[in-house]
Length: 76
Image 1 (cartoon, one colour):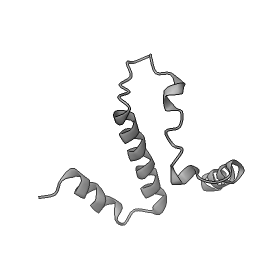
Image 2 (cartoon, rainbow, N blue to C red):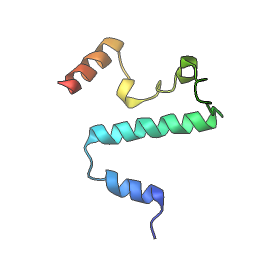
Image 3 (tube, rainbow, N blue to C red):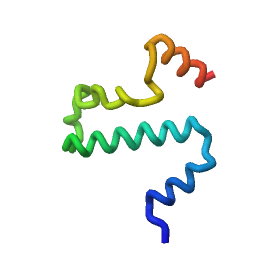
């Protein structure tokens, strides 16, 4: 019997790297969100609560200009 984590792993094994990174970033976001105890009420979320959530994300590591150029290149 598979658990949810195993099911997700199976789905991602053959997925493109970009998708895997995106899933990883989102997972990191959710873990940080719940570890910090942030449980926003509709309409009361401040942008400050998102500060630093992606600082260790592989998608945003590097010089800011290089990150911007890489993102633009992904968009075509």
